[in-house]
Length: 275
Image (tube, rainbow, N blue to C red; front, top):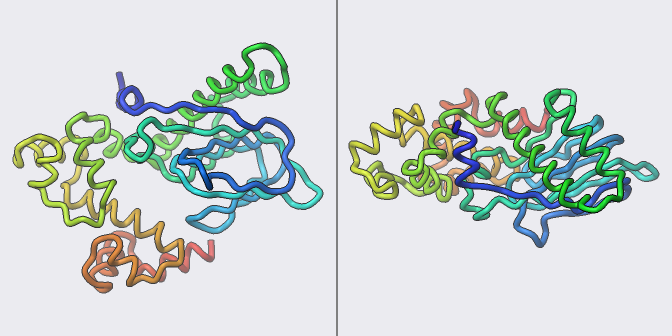
């Protein structure tokens, strides 16, 4: 069993197809349900309006995964339409699911970059237009396969680090990692994280570095920076972001951010806006 198999065996998911066909106009999803979403854009153009960044135009056949609960909006230009298949993705345990937390909140991949999906998509497209018994079940199971393929792609393209995947698949270390992910602003100490994992301080520190490849302090900083980027994209003031991710002052946060990314938070955000 590899790391991904181990992670999925412990933190599973299921999909439920709820739309299949031609879509026009607009629709807002995620307002009432604490679930993720999978969108398969078969043909046409659709604009995705996301909470954590600028709108994204999907203008070629693509797979889009929202792994984390949140609100997003699909909009198609007036008079146009797009061929869509949409499914809810329920990660077992919701916000506690380590598999979901290992994924980027938004993942969009053109189908042309996923050649291994060819046969799966052929089956899915054939099933989508038939009206045989069991269609819903088959579509749901094929969407499960699509999600796994997307996770593989995220791993291959380093959108999920091997260190993170390794740590989350470790039964003991995953408890400490989940504590950090749950509250990265908290000033976690090695002793506290060792207690979360049910290990001695020295054993925890050795195991963490061996499996994850960094110290607990470095990993905590990394998670704080990931959260900081999301908050900056929501146009929160730098000073507010500094406090929300666990820094006692804006200069301390700016210094840590610059050391990580080679530029200040404002310079980084300006580059995102230009992009």
